[in-house]
Image (cartoon, rainbow, N blue to C red):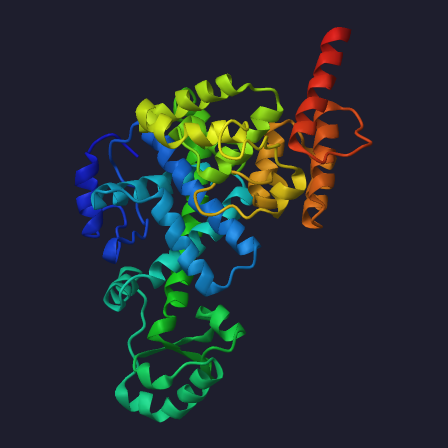
Length: 427
């Protein structure tokens, strides 16, 4: 990306399908990297927001959400992290963030595989939300060589199409547009027996063309990632070593969830995050007066001091037993945190339970954990032994055994303090 044109100019061109792979209906195809002015702050923040969407998709898939649930979930994720009041700014952010992350995730086979899978899934559900006319335009955008089935041929196979429709719980009466394509072009539809096959061809309904488009999209992005990696290795990494390279390398290790980076970034946390983090700080020894000062310093940057005092200070005092029933609330245990289900836009929970695999690996690497200890931890996570994984993380991080096991975040904190104090005393 070069610094040659304004955001609004590139957005206008993208909306018209010019230059940077803007698709129909505001859904870009990301064929060509845009040449536009991007401030370093936007370069990073736009990418982080898109990563939140992709990470959310990964988590949704890992939890076994059904396709109809995923469609709604992806729509909510996109609205929470990528929308802007100005549609042109939303399109800018969409295009810029994709190409930034393409640069970030092109550098290893593992990174490319994850990015390709998540971007393809995102495109699939965004395509489904487009109007039929926009979907047809996107088919043209990808230059798919398929034309709607002629009426005479449709009538010849209509009964067969109806039989397939009934087996999958649909009505063939409302499906009058079909495409005849080589069966290998739609392996997902063939595998799930959702299309009529005849003489090596699959008859794909208009409502199913997402499979055709997504196959082409995935192919394009896969090739682009390989080419981007070559450019990164050959020129970009060295040329941008003092400017972009540190940001790119940091973004590839970015992880989201119960790390509360959102508090520093956006000066806000939703209720669940405020409760979990606030009570943890209380358990760690933070006094009420200091807690109020801490949260006011962060939140007032976004909502102002007056609104903070009216809407947020009460709940902090309530946590300390100074309001309402005067209950002295205690920090959440591991079991309570593990059993919780953070929603869209939330940033609390258990990293072993609620992180995707790539994000958890990145978090552990950032703590200096790799090799055999890392794989043992990941094995515990895969088998849903989240507290054992946490205990093994503590042992790997500090180089000591923890026979009692970790059962509480504040226990992890206090035991870590003991280890660090002992090391300082011996040093």
